[in-house]
Length: 449
Image 1 (cartoon, rainbow, N blue to C red):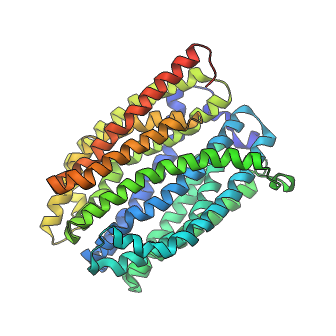
Image 2 (image 1 turned 90 degrees about the horizontal axis):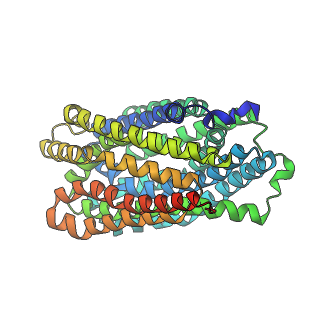
Image 3 (image 1 turned 90 degrees about the vertical axis):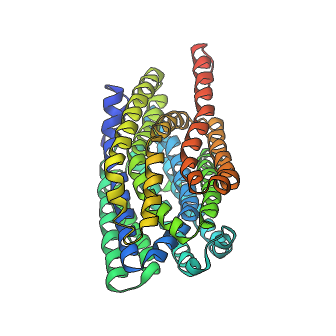
């Protein structure tokens, strides 16, 4: 495993290792946000506020699908990472084979099931008639690209599991640059509208997937399965599906709650939809470093747990929580001064939408530290292969979304929309903190977890 540098997270100062590993992930999050902001700018300028609303109305449905994909491949990667930490070379190859095979099968089945259901779902969540056509186009084209998205994520996850977070950044950057170029070309130059914006996303993902696969074949052959490893036993499939589906369901449960929230937002009209869609780009900037930190913490925990170094897991958890608190406060204060000028780029000539978006940004921004701490604890439990507490965490988050959709938003209007995230982050952290306390007590008593 010399080419993978797999010991990168099992030695040295925990905080320094985690931060160093998370910086490329942070850069990827920044690139992703940059793309979504450019996408919103291009659509808002050349298609109009209804076009921006159409992208926003389909956003949570797409996140539901891609969230499951991201969680599923993340679950596969946890098993692979633990085996890398333990130095189990044959187990590594079997895990890579199972992950790639299952990613392909699950993504194909998902697309076949979801495509005909998409218009029905958009109708059920109260998508306004004036944006229904564009919303359907955007959702269906993007969901069709789920096969490419899942394979791209799985290939990148293998590289992350081996301790390399730099090279996936290179390929993601190439994909993002292509996405921005295609966005401008298809929407602004060729005037393909919303379908053009969706096609740009899928095509850029395909380019990123191809580049990542080429790199895997050239640099990580020792991790990739040989011919005999493709004879996957049911035991391997069961192990990977168990954790993969669990992590995928965690994301789905949360995104289902977000779909309910979107339905409630849709009932407030196209201007509100556009305002929230624009504000979510800024919210993404707030959450971006926290998600990068949590992704690094999952890999860090899995490697150190596989290597039998639980003391490093504890140190990493504590130090990462401090980093998350600092990042949350910094991003919230930065929001105060830059939020309105940035969001005004997407909402030209609409003072009502701009006012709503600014309000949303400020309320969610000053509570984002709650998300940071919650994500760190959840990532540690996922890296340890624990399933129950993260699932309960997702259920709590969804329960708050249901409360908001059926009580807070009808009662408080747009203020209810702004309170959804802070309440969800607060509630979903509770089962994680309890579960980690119980787990550590067991370990201190010398019991198996």
